[in-house]
Length: 537
Ligand code: N01
Image (cartoon, rainbow, N blue to C red; front, top):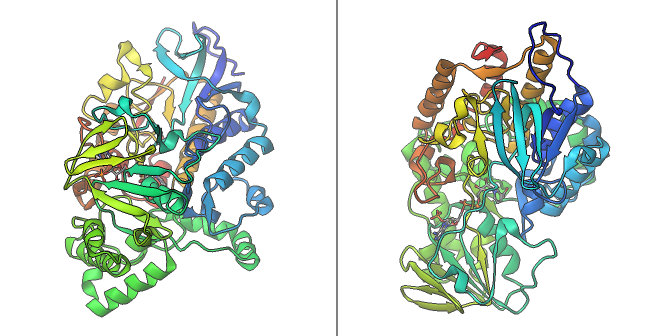
C-alpha cells in the first residue's frame, strides 16, 4: 500500500492503490506489473466470468487471430514462450483463451479480480485525489490510480433493423456467442456482415449448415492467411530467436513480425508488382500483403489500385458463378484494416451458400421467419450478426466517467474520442487507458505491452516521488492529436469508411482515433518525450 510522506497531505486513505478494469491482455499485465512488481494494493474487475477479455467473449465458430502465433502473446517473460507449445502458425480463440488463463495462473492474477462485475460509474474526487469506482453490484471503492483495459473492439454493434425483436429463431452477435456453443447443423443460417469476423464465421459454418445466406453490404478485399501447421524445427527457431524477433516487432510499424517494405509499387514494372503480390498471396497474411509488399499501398492511389486490382482478379478466378463473383468483387479503395482468410471466396462455390448484396437490395426488416430485403424474404432458423463494434470509445461512453469539475468523458469526447499518447486525457488525472484513443494501430499485444510498461513506470515514478496526480498539458494533448491527424491525412485509410474512424456507427463522428505512425515511432516518442507533456502535482 502506498504510504504518503506529504507533510501537507490532507488526502484520505484509499481502499486500493490501483483499480484495474478488464481481464484481457492489458488488464492482466497491468495487475502483474502493479501488484507483483511494484507491490501495490490492486483490485480488478471484469464483466466476464473469467479472464480473457476479447477472447473470453469472441467464441464464434472459426475465431482466430490474424497475427502469427509467435507474436500474439506477451513478450515480457521469456519463460512463457519457452514453456509454450502451439499447433499452427495462427492461434485459434480457444488457444488464445487458454494462453491467457496460463498467464493468469502463472502470475496468480485471478485472486485480484472480481468477475461478473461491471464498472458503471467512476468519478474523480478532487478533494482527495482519488477515483471513486462504483459497480453494478452497488459497491463503491476508492483508488489513487485507475487503469482501464476495456478493449478496443468490445462494445458490440447491432444495427437497429426494423422488427429485430420479432424474429422467432435464434439470433446472436458474434462477440456474445454462447459459451456452450450453438448447434447449427442442418439449419438455415443467415450472417449479416463480412468483416474479419464475418469472413471467419462464414468459412467455418458453411460445411455444417443446411443453407447459408450471407448479407453483404460492402465487398471486401481479403487475401489468404497462409494457415499451416508449425513444425518443431520452426518452433525451436522462434524460441531461439526470441530477443531478435521482439526487438524487430517493437521497432517496426505494424508489429506483425515481418519487415515492412521500403519499395514503392509505382517505381517497379507491372510484372514486378504481379510477382511480389503473387508471392505475398502465396505466403499469406493481410498486413503482410498491404505493408510487406510495397511501402505505398496505404498512401498512394496508384499503388493502392494495383494491389486492389490484383485481389479483384483473384476473386474473379476463384468464384465460379459469375453473378456471385461480380457481387463479391470489391470496387473502392483497399484501405481498411486488411483482411485475410482461410478460403473465403472459395466458400461461395458451395451449393449451400448464397450471397445477397444488401447494397443493391437493402434489408427492409427482420420478420418472425427471416430477413426481408427489397428483393424478397430469406427464411432462416438462425441469424448471426457479424456487424462489428462501436470501437475505441464505445466501452468508455457506457460508463459514467467524470473527471475534474464533474466533466464527463462523453462531454470531453463530444467531437470524437481523443487522448494524449493513446493513454491519458486532460481533466482526467491518474486515469490510464490501455488502447485509449490516438494510440498505435498495430498487432495489439506489443502495443498493449508498451503502454502497460509506460503506465507502471509512471506509477512507480509517482510513488517514489510522492506525487499525487498526473495529467496531460492541454497543449501537449492538442499537439499529439494534430500529429495523429497529419499522419492520417497522408494515408488512404482516412478515405476508406471503417470502424478505424468510427464510420461504421450511424451518427458517430468521423474522427482520427489512431496514431498511424507505427509502433517503433510511438515507442521512440514515449522514450524521448519523457514527462514533458504532463503536469504532476
Ligand atoms: O467488424 P467490421 P468485424 N447492414 O466492422 C457490416 C478485429 N478482428 O467484427 O463494410 C449491413 O470490420 C459491415 O458492412 P460495411 C479486427 O481488428 C480481428 O468483422 O460497413 N451490414 C461489415 O461487413 C477487425 O477489423 C480478427 O459496409 C452491416 C461488418 O458488418 C475488427 O475486429 C477477427 C451493417 C462489420 O465489419 C472488426 O471486425 C475478427 C448494416 N447495418 C475481428 N452494419 C482477426 O484477427 C455493419 N455491417 C482475424
